Structure formats: C-alpha cells, structure tokens
Image (cartoon, rainbow, N blue to C red; front, top):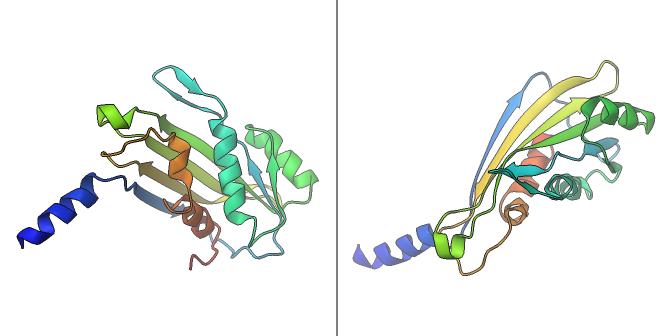
Length: 179
C-alpha cells in the first residue's frame, strides 16, 4: 500500500493537465464529413485582471481549425470576431457550418514559483448556416488547468494541445470519431 502513495502523489502534483469538457445540443446535429464546408471565426482575445493576452483569440481559432484540417479539409479561418459578419462571410464562401469560439477565461500564472495554475475556459458553438436562417446546433465548453509542480512557465495556449484534449473536444463537438 505504501509503495503506491509516492507515485500517486507525484502524478497528482506533477505537470499533468486537468481537462474537462461539457457539450449541450440545441437540436439534432448532423455528422460532418470530409465534404462538409466549415468556417472558424476568431475569438476575442482573452483578458485577465485587466491584462489583455494579444493573439490568444487567433490562437484558439487556429487550434480549432487544426483539429479539423485533416477530416474536413474545406475548413477555412475567417478573420472576424463578429458572428453576424462572420456568418455572412462564411455563407458567401459557400460554407454550411460555422464554429464560433469564445474565450471565457484566460489566466496565465507563473506556476513554477507561485504554485498557482494556468486556467483556460473556452466555449465553442457549432452553427448551421445552410439552409438559412443560421441555427445553433451545439455548444461545447472546454476547461483546462496545468499541473501544480512544474519547472517551466508554459503559456495557457499549451493547454489547447492534442495531448490535453482540446483537439478531441473540437472533433467530438462536430460529431467526428475521436479514436
């Protein structure tokens, strides 16, 4: 019994990230395929305690697009944070669906010396554009924290990696297999 305490404690305190995802369907969500045409909007940059994290919104959008680039090659990034303008631009480009990410929380801490962990919370909405009018099909929320014991100060966007689950969160949101 005692031989398991140290490894279990080390794993709990170690550099592993904690992730959590919640999905909510507003209506029937069709399974997107390689033939689907999809646009991803940029998110508004994250702000924590009055400090803006410039480029964080674009980084989130790029990570969403990258998660879908292989299974849905017709995924385009739209450089707009406005959903109405984005929906119009996506529709003009022939897209059937739009993903609208939103940064709910973006907290960058100096974990290596403070013990305070980075925290991100991202909302992503899947919106059907065709046939009109646009309709929200599904909303997902992704939350991640880094580990307590770390020797480097990784930025919060590191929590959006494939290993930490964001990649799979996005794929599951649009109904793609996650294996």
